[in-house]
Length: 396
Image (cartoon, rainbow, N blue to C red; front, side, top):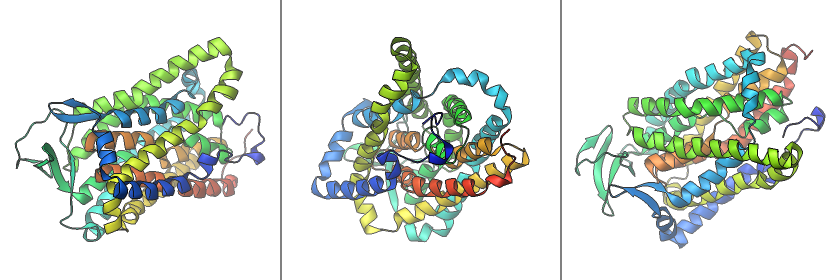
């Protein structure tokens, strides 16, 4: 996806998985719902293969494997040596860091709260509840309250019963604090942006997530009266960001040293290309096998979640794009700087929601809706970028 050998006019999304991601997600919804009706115990049994702490499932091993396979191909593509050269393109890098971490999490919080907690609350169900995992390390008696939740027993395991809209709200928060470090490479490529700069921003955002994702996630969940599982947040970042990041960095160095840069890009990455999407789709089937009943009983659920996500995506894009123009950036730098904030790192959001709240939680479902709308909305923004190139100074 470097774009170095491909004329800008020829840039297209050639990979069938990337091009039809929304279609695959839609098929996974159907497959997951069918699986949930035909074999309701299968996903539960798979999720039962977990690492338990104090009798509570903390890490689902099958899901952890799927999510590692989602993340590793992304991380291994990053050349972290380029981070040290980021100073030459300081303004777009600082712009994306500012939008991603100082603005985006808080606008997502406000928009999701307005729509899910106020405007759509009656449609979701004022009294509708959801069962989510107890925060890691917390042992409260049945009937105790924690934030907006109440401790209940479900199949012999202590769970928190929270309002359903708050569970969806939690998933939106986790999406809002996850700047894209994967598909943004595709969006920048299609928009004829600066591919080298995009890789630099991806590397820097991946590193910043190690610290800021857990801190902002814990803070915003706490403000929203949702469980704040700090230990699980740290564990989630370690498993789903740090581990694949370190594995990608070390294996990239070893492969390039042993076989060369060209073999790495043309052979190794080519083999990895479908793995992220296949692992993602497998996870989605499991998620929807749990949530099929909720969707069938309230088929507009996805719409209620999608609307605030759609508004947030457009708001962040236009804010970043306007600031890029104000800073007099070149179009090739402005396009990826705006889209990296608009797009979400849904792989990390899904992983974190699954670990913190459970595979069957509304929070996990909300992060999946982020995948569902990602491709059509971002392709719309790519077209907007291409049509507004004249707003920026041409490349020297």
